[in-house]
Image 1 (cartoon, rainbow, N blue to C red):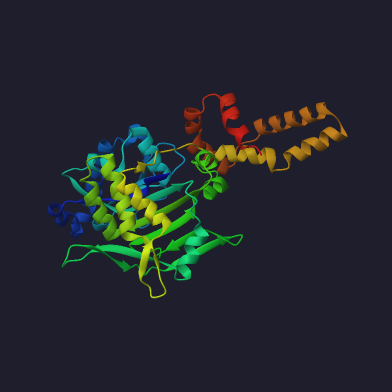
Image 2 (spheres, rainbow, N blue to C red; image 1 turned 135 degrees about the vertical axis):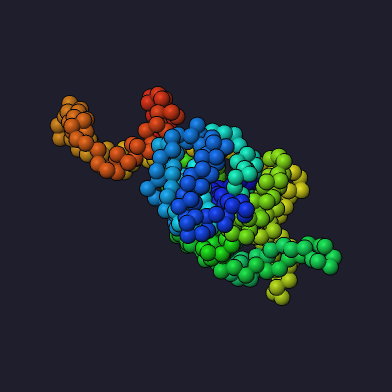
Length: 390
């Protein structure tokens, strides 16, 4: 199965051109802050952030380069709306992390193109400064090591598609991007094509492994599949601006899925080549994407915001912290009553001590999330902890 989606976005709101001059003069800088606040009020209302995320508060960690930032609610993900007090040209940055975007989509039922169309206003212009597009291959037996070996040995190459001006036909040119492979146990788990600062960058990685190692919010999905390889294209600046224009003209989910698939194929097209460097055909993973487009069998990813952070701590406490071994030693030396006395002591000790800063921070960002999603502890334990135990 091939599933398409958007991992994260960064949106920039800017004054309409006719208003820019008012904020670029020396006396206009003070006006910019109040103007920015007004724009945020309008944008926040259109996006319904307070109903979706929670009440607006100051964010202590603004996006890089910005000075004043807000976030919404008490959530376990990063989301910020920010501006620079003295730089109107930087506009207002709206940064969705992957988890924040998943949460917003889950709560509103909106896809990215619908969100962008909904928040348009005559008070500001908007465009993406970054968007990450994804193509997830589930149970497709994609071998990341083979992809990289074929590429480095010259058996395959990376191309981008363009349209010839004279004939109008689609042609391909080599996409000369810097590559880097990360190996684990002699197998490549991640490949990068392109630099961090380039307008487009491709990351191919083992999503199943990543979710299991990090106890990510898609952990159960990872456990339910045999293999899961993600192709993730990061598009910035010019490419992101172009995608904004296209997204604002999308009419339905089918067109949205086709835009994602065609963009990935246009910018990151892997083909087999012969010793002379001539194209001999599509690689299997490129062909699968082409086949899905041709058959209109494109599927959009579903948002998933399940929080596994506490699960991970609980499973670690049971299986890896040495607690089980310690209880067995106590029982062997004394008896079951001694084990219960020790557990009761831990409970009393926990009741009498205050949480440290890390614990307080975690509670602030996660308590409501767990209470909302898991109101019944017994059900939570049966459905989530037992399946994670070895």
